[in-house]
Length: 207
Image 1 (cartoon, rainbow, N blue to C red):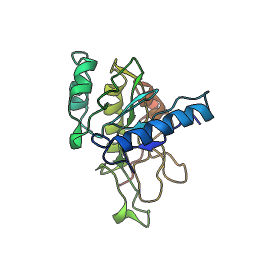
Image 2: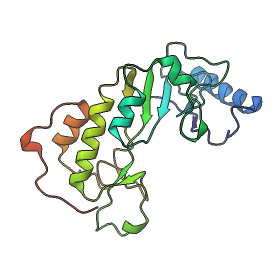
Image 3: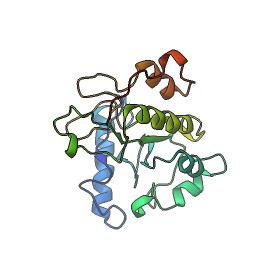
Image 4: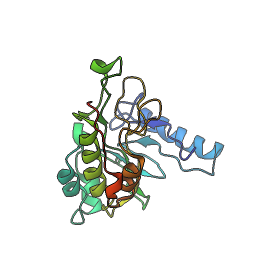
């Protein structure tokens, strides 16, 4: 366990902006979790509409690297980021809970689907965008991670996601943990390194 997350994307508390009871509920679970386990950080509501939190968590599934670079680039001030409306009209922090120096992390992004034709649920799988084949998946992932790794305001990130699970086919690995493109290339892209030529994908599987 790396971090405790009582709420994700305001599920179960859909009116955090206007309902004090919803905000108090999230705050209460944040402090209860901190009391039960003071050794780990707690994200009160992952993604947006934060109250008390140890990590300022952002969810952003824009798959255009240029857009991501512009949205979080060096010319963007943190204060402007918090005052700006997010996709769907969500704000990052609620009134009365300003950013107080917590690390800012991109805790959900990516979501590039690639199911593999052999998947019996091929036509029902889900992702934010869909790659045509595993080579396109590698190119998209690499381009996106090159940008995310260079964003100075981010202290860390979580990609969505490591492996496929049920209808969600946006993993870097299939559900059986077989990589969709070479592990060396996944590691290099994740770390922001240039991908070694010997790690280039030799075979391509249709998505």
